[in-house]
Length: 206
Image (cartoon, rainbow, N blue to C red; front, top):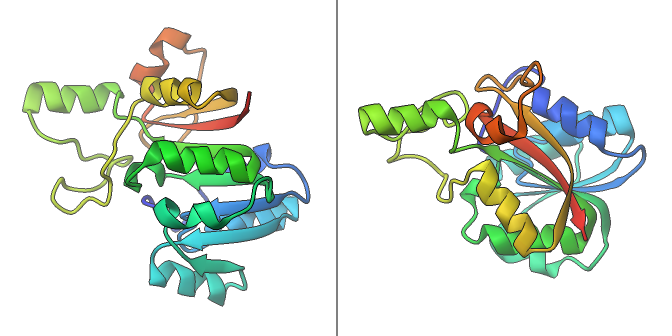
C-alpha cells in the first residue's frame, strides 16, 4: 500500500461500505493492516492479508491480523478460484509489475474485486507535466520520480479499458479529490478522468 495516513482514510470508509457483512476478504498489499482492522470492526469479515514489506507484516501481526508476506505479482497464482467473497487492491496496482495479470487473479480468486489507484489523468498532473515539464508530486502521488515504488501509472480511462479486456463488469465507482475526499456535486461522466485525483472501482466477472 503506497499511501499511508495516521487518521481514518475516506477511501477505506468507502471500501468498508461496499463489503458485505461477514464476507471472506483478501487484502492484497495490505500495508499495516488498517483496512483489514476497519473491515473486521465494521463488517465482521473473515480477513486475510498479503503484504510485501516485512514492516507491514510485523505491524499487522502485532494488531492480531492474519497477514503473510508475499508478492502480488508472483503469489496470487497460488490461491484457489473463488476462495474469497472480495479481493482488495488498495493503492497498490501502480506498484505491480503486471497489473493486468494481478487484476485477473483478483477476479479469479474473489467473487468481486475492489481496486483503487491514483489517477494520472487528473488535471493537476496534466498541468504539472504540461507547464512545468516535471513528474507530478502531490498528496495522491507523494513520491519523487527517483524514489517512487510506483512503476505503472494509469488513468481512469486506462483502467476501464483494462476491465473491458478482462471481461470485468464495473459495478460501482467512487471518485476522490487530491486530498482523498469524495468529489462533491454532480460531475459529468466525461469529466471523471479530468477531475478525480484517485478512484475506487468495484468489479466482477461478466
